[in-house]
Each structure stands twice: as structure tokens, then as C-alpha cells.
Image (cartoon, rainbow, N blue to C red; front, side, top):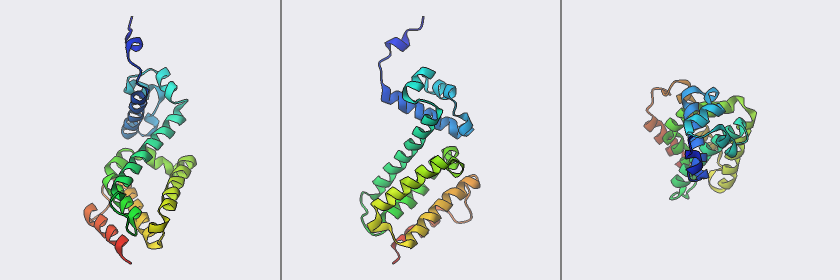
Length: 185
């Protein structure tokens, strides 16, 4: 009889994080279809019951993975903005995070791309962007900064569509050009 499940100390936050990381890894490897309850539980080393203790169903797990990705992006943005309070600071952080996190975004592209077809995820992304823009309205409401953010989104989307190769300009050169545009007046 296996008694490790009974003797193992309860660490709910670690188990929850392991489940989220397992779901992200499966999405990277197999797309959203790879996120099954059994596959995530197996990958995280927990039972299906353990998964259901943290997430009521598969949709709740996918929602949590989306939130997890947004939290990671929030942390990067906040880190980048910590020393920048000038006009366009949010947009600069957004551009830098798009380029810095592009490999992470590409690895999580199954979930990110699902925003295109899933109205609920699309609405959650839009609400998140709108909240950040409202928070930074004093520094980032200029329409030209919106163009820069849209260009950064286009860069990310081009990387996804072209298997990591967005075009002839180097990512560093394009990022520098977009950052320079945030400082133009």
C-alpha cells in the first residue's frame, strides 16, 4: 500500500503552482488540446482529485493559467516601470516586456492565440489592458503611444505567425525604434 499521499505534508500553494506550470508546459508542447485534467494531474504528480481541489473544472484551470500569465506580465511591467515615471513609461515597459517576454509568449502561444477565438479570454485581455491604460492615463494617453503599443502587439503576432522570425529588422533595432518613438514629442 502506498502511503506517501497520506504522509506528504500539505503544501497547497506549491501544488497549485505545479498544476499551473504543468498546464503551461502541456499547452506549449501540444496546444490547448493538450490541457486535459488527467495530463495536467499526471505532469504535476498529483491525483485528479488533487487537481479538482484547486480547480473546479478544466475551464477554471485554463482561466487560472491565463491569470498566471498576466501576473507574470504584471511583474515584468512593474519592474520596468519602477525607475521610469516619465511620459510614455507604461508604453516603454509594454514594448520592452513584449520583446523580453516574446520567447515566453511564444511558448505560451496556444493560450495567447486562443484569445483570438475565445470571446471570454479576449474580453479578459481587453479589460486588463484597459485597466493598465486607465492607471497610466496621465503618462500614456497620447495617441502616438497607442500606435507604439499596437506595433509591439504586431511584432509579437508576427513572431507567432512566422515561427519566431518577424522580418528583416533585428528585434533589438525594432525595439530601439519603438522606444525612441515613445520619447518623441
